Image (cartoon, rainbow, N blue to C red; front, side):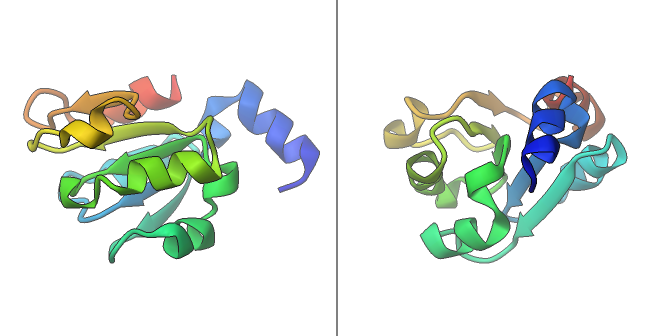
Length: 121
């Protein structure tokens, strides 16, 4: 990403880079893409290597749908302290991840289209 691209992404959140991890049964990634976000998906185990490959260094938002992978939050924050960590799951975040998560959303309460709109504002 060039500095111009980075500046544009910061001023226009619809150009944001978003990483969605785990299964996406509610279609949040597609809703984010429909609103102009660049979405990378990590369907497998989330670790430092897969986060780096997905572009965590320049990501604006990390979405976890499988909270069994909640350890991805502190790992992502090590790579990019400014990334917004969001859980989109019916499950509760483990205690160790709650302090570093920015937002926890239950898909039964907010649909994917509403969440995408709120995240990209």
